[in-house]
Length: 274
Length: 274
Image 1 (cartoon, rainbow over the protein chains, first blue to last red):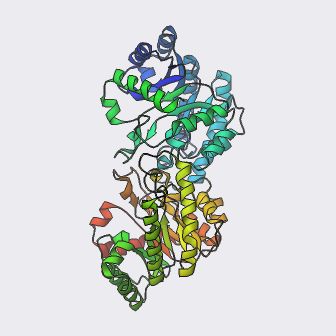
Image 2: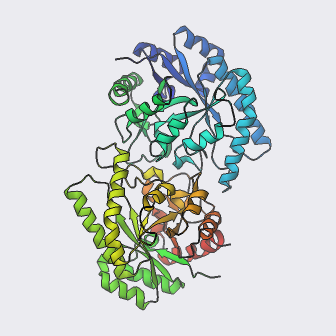
Image 3: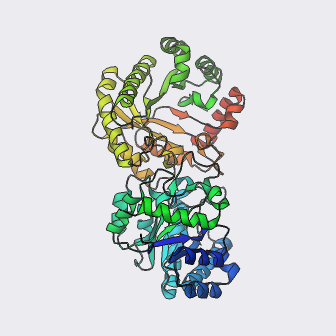
């Protein structure tokens, strides 16, 4: 039973600090960790990088950049500047990628095509900086239920279209089972994503959908997603990197984090691996 | 100000019986009504057909057939038989179409491709009966958040693929703004749907998403959808039939139905028409 590729995204153990999450991974024999910027800031970026390295872990992803749908002007400029800071942090941490959640419609706007166009422009403006820093931007298609308020990037195909003008080592995509499992084109899109898959994230789609749509993700095996099918597809597309478990769920956040990690290992074996 | 094409789907005024909804339409000058099978059964199918005709209304749609993802066997046979009854009822009512909500994954199944394949088989098996009855089946792509438990048909493109083997007057599609607005391919798909659009339904996507995902639809203007854009697209694709307002929302259901109809007329003028 190998956990060589298993990564704990620290959102899954939301109340753990970076230090606690690193120690939790070490206790569980997990070699990869996905970090979030806010807890990394709490610890200090350089100190977090040392902590992770000293523990023998590697950073599967840094969450998150993005939110670049604002109209041109001060807010947009500030957001792009913040994205450059996120790129710096991903570089300092040696993260495999910086996850980009692109943002929803600006307040009062119903111009979806316009928002998507500004995302394309924003990515293009960040690519040279990311390349110089050696950081791969990972465009994350979000489930369409987040289109209005989180991410106007709704399918893997759309993310690949957006990535296409840029070198594959500068702009990749995230395949998150929760966001893409429903897509009738997911098989074709993952095949098309060969060379662009920067991150593979797993968590389940559970029903009934929890009341808070942002906390509606489930532990693998608790829902409806065929993880093996999707893992085989990303592997057939050449991806052999970490498999990151990222779960936003109030019940899981309320549980003992060590128990969550143990359950995650078990379910990973049962539902993700062959 | 014309309401010639405006249709009240009776789900929008959920506590009205068929008779109350018909009378409400007449009071408001609305010429089309979308009916649901359960309240039609309460009134009696033949009596409901007479009631609607005597009031000078026409039936824009009957909701709903479908739920045909069960594995072969007794449940599936019973469902297909029930769909034939729904076809009979749509014929008796002179409905423009029978809306097909195809159903989610069977309990415990994670085989999405298999469920979709059974939908294709089920539609094919119903087409001869529908043709004989002169009823058009209208495949409704459902928002991907309903993929697991309501409808494995998730995009307009997928619905068009499913409809393609059958004559356009036997199998069409529903374009419901709530279900399709997020789709990066919606413009291309609506263009492709020329000759297949059996129903155009409008309601808004509101945020934050209400706690009950099944009651998360909003009145036009309360959310993020650009209705004019989508209406122009369906018109460019040749659709000039009724524009049906179908809203599942606890607050709207709690309001006085005549007020809801008046608000619907107002918002239709402000947000849907030019």
